[in-house]
Every structure is written in C-alpha cells, then in structure tokens.
Image (cartoon, rainbow, N blue to C red):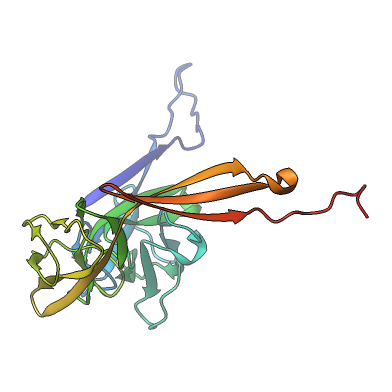
Length: 269
C-alpha cells in the first residue's frame, strides 16, 4: 500500500492575542492504494483483485467523492483502440477506457482491471478531481498461452547462399513468446543450424526446412535462383531505350532483351 499526499493551506484564521495571531494548521489530503496495485498477469487477463483506493483528508476517510480510473494508451498505431488496460466499476461488468466511482462510507472506491492485449508495461491513472489528487498504478503484462508458430514467408534466394530464418511462437494477440524453436533440414537443404541459418545448394531447386516448437510444426520453403542483372541500354532501331536481363552461372550467360514502352509527348500526333 502506498500514499499520494498533497498539502493545502487552509484559509488563515487570525485571532488577536496580545498583538499576535494564530494560523490554522495545513490540511493534508491523501490518495491511498489499498489493494490491487503492481500486479503481473498475462495479456487480456481480468485481475481477480480489484484496484481499491481510499481518499483521506487529515487522515479521515472521505465518503461521497468521485474517483476516476483510466487505462493509459499503448504506443501502437490507432491508439484510441489500444489501451494498456481497461476498467469497470465493480458493480457492473462493462470494461471501458475510463470508469467513475464514488467513494463509499469508508472513503474507498474500487474498479476491476482487465489488462490490454500488448505484453509489456501497463498502467491505470487514478484521479480525485475534487481534491486535486492523482496517482499512477503500474502493471506488467506477459504474453498469454502459445497460439501459433510464425516464420519467414516462402522466399527466393541466390544459389549457394546462407540466409536466416526467423521463426517464433506468439500468443493469440501476436505477442512474441520465448518458446524454443528447432530446425531440421528438409528437401534440397545443404545445412541448417540451431539458430535457423539455412545454406542452399548451387543449383536451381526448391526446398524446405522443417520448423517445430512444442505441438506446432510447419515448413519454411525456398526457391533457389541464379544471379541476374538488369542492364539498361539503347537499341539501334529508333534509338528507343531498352533493357537486358543477364543471368550468369559459371561460364554460362543468358540474355533476355526488351524495349521500354514508348509514350507520346504532347507535341507528337
């Protein structure tokens, strides 16, 4: 439990006493987190313990005061729909970006917290506008259970190269997990190491690498192509600009020629 305290100087009340004066003591206001702060759970989880705060003035609970609970925005595109957490009055089951709750006879207000979809830091901002009090309650969001295996899409690679595969497991929200991923050489694979670096043959073939993590398995496919260069040049006929694709493999060279389409200018008929 922690406390956010502000001190407001009460209106001065001077009482004449032998030429002197007496000033009332400052008023102390507190916003105290009683329960439900600094929790850790998985993405999308609804926390069992509600977030409970207490509003006090000079150490005495303040009933009938409005407290607002607000989930902070995530650093993602379309932030209006991307909250790190959602809140609901304990009397209802409707989770929104904000909830307003009036303190009870014990000066307490409570809200149920549902963590957002993104793994990482989350926070609820608690405010008591009438007393100019505010505090932030932090949470940690972990990836939820494994839902899918994600990997590099099918790709074209040059003959004889070594390229990396990026394969990992995510939860249903797309959060990356730390599950172990293994790789095994499939068709037309020279080698693949434990980190997913694949070496392909020097001939034009198609191949695949078997990827597995727990109950998930899939294949990352590739196509080996030969080196090719695009060579711009002028053709003799009409001096129209054209191109040549040149593919080389060892001592063998193949060229394909083509003309760039001719577009009429404004001055041409």
